[in-house]
Image (cartoon, rainbow, N blue to C red; front, top):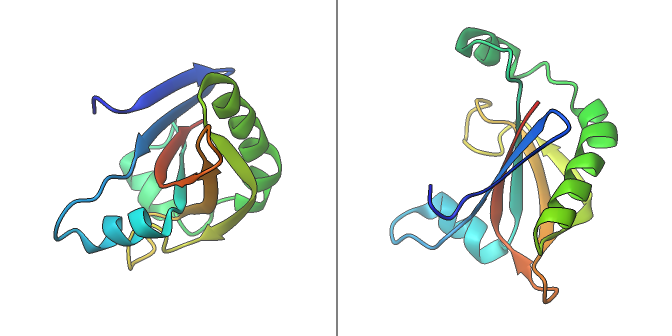
Length: 123
């Protein structure tokens, strides 16, 4: 997408997309108005079948401790965004079924205002 910011460093690929208001799109509009950001993690070596099978078995506590601080550092060095320290895991983050789990967090723009972003991390 043309508004995406893509950063690749140290074996980590980060894609950032601002959430915009779309009439009739209830989920994105809720995220847009609440100004919350969603972080999804993908594993590059997984097949589609492996990804579907392993979605409920993710090592999210390790990712929260080790991966997310590194991603926050990369994002803050390469963009104006500041990722807040509080991040919570949600198995149902992207959908009402457990198909797209991820972390919910708050991200601030360069002026200190919260922004709604979708962030995809590939490791």
